[in-house]
Length: 227
Length: 410
Ligand SMILES: Nc1ncnc2c1ncn2[C@@H]1O[C@H](COP(=O)(O)OP(=O)(O)O)[C@@H](O)[C@H]1O
Ligand SMILES: [Mg+2]
Image 1 (cartoon, rainbow over the protein chains, first blue to last red):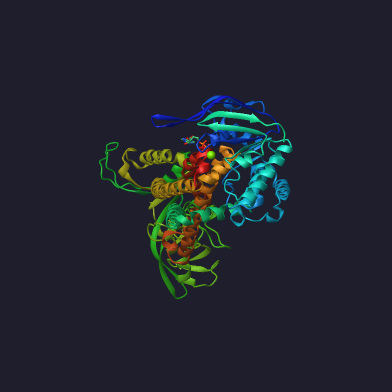
Image 2 (image 1 turned 120 degrees about the vertical axis):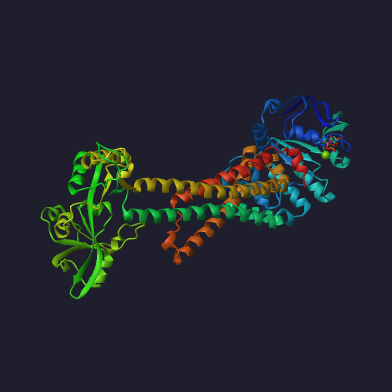
């Protein structure tokens, strides 16, 4: 599903150059569930942005689901984000003035799904994350855990094969955090590729595969025997 | 529904910029207002003047004989030019560019009906005079015709003030008026008109009779003047030149002696008025357009603020797969909404002003200000261009945002 070869990302900061990612190579197959670990500033978010086509690598090759991402133009990248990627962010990033239902329907709107169909599918997704009775609520009227569940429902809107979550439990108490992780594990069990950035070692231990970054370099990539 | 919420959202967002939004919208409204109102008044005034010009006579020229200023065929200058009725007939016969022509013999005389006596301008004219000088006749009556001329009939057409002076509101068709001791029958009455100029008095105070009858009654050998219109406006200069040629030959003056005839060229006046108005309107609209552009710059600034305000949301939309084109259109749509609001303010203000002015006596002198379809279309197109200009740059900035950076923006 995901092939990274010698991918680097540099930021030019005046005279100096920050290497947020340095020669990272990675293979992730379909339905894999992996945790990405590393101290703050080690490049985890950058890696996720590159994987999610939000950002383009400075060097190296990235192939997603058979597509050479480096050769795509901006609208094509938007299309990939829309169809193949579901993002879950630490700060939820819901549209504040839209209701839960409208937030979930938003990616379908960008995909050109008809309004009635959007509403039906968004409703079903909210049911699925246990928020069927909160359709008309705005993000400010929901708890952190509920907002993150709306965000997961939204990530699933266009049935993407890949879910990328950047510290999805970082702003949540441990119980809500666990619920979120449960949901993410379910998604992988359904056949989606799920990559979760976290620095919570206990949460990370629930993943079979652990990818560890340090100063932009991949320093560990281990898969445990099933447990 | 979605559109309405978008608008509410936009207005909520701009609440933080209340003063700025209000002044910007007012500025644009004012620009729109000036364009529309100035053009509306211009349109009204031009129509008004045109109507009065037509009431006097559309695209006509009036010609009076004058004195020669050049030697001709051994004759000296300073001689009086005399034009006879036959000379006018010769013009009609020999100048193919001529449309209509009528001689005019003028007397100033008294009319009598019973004990009522009134003085008026008595014009002896041909039937063509009615069309040339726009004599619209009250229903039931008629202007003079060829038989009147041929048979030297004693028939008259009354100016509307002459009619009221002699008969009040009584019916007049077929009634008799005494002139020089002779009975004349009234065959028509002029519909009241507002003419922008006159000679020998206004038409309201004039009566017309067949030129042949006039000759018989007053014994005039010469015409006071004649009136003509070319077949087409573009033939007018040629027709006028031929008038000099034919009359010069017949009346003995050099065709290049411009002073030999006094010509009141209304077509030339109409052309001048048209260009004067065009220049005037371009100037007025130009100043209005400038005001609109200034308003447009304000709207552009507002939209830059708006894009900054919404950067985070734009980042979210991009992360979810909104293409740059969609972001661009979103900002443009908001700009159009703002411009439309300013424009509506302007339209409403100008509409109110024209409605109020119509209730005053002002239209009598300056015409009815009128927001013509052309003005509406022009202003709408202008507003559209302003919106495109104002919205394009903020929209482009929004569409080019880097999604990662936009997402961390708060
Ligand atoms: N837009 C940026 N401009 C400059 N430097 C950046 C930018 N984004 C990230 N970095 C730098 O790249 C490195 C990795 O950042 P990031 O991927 O956010 O780390 P993490 O998510 O692991 O905390 C950091 O040193 C950070 O300062
Ligand atoms: Mg991070």
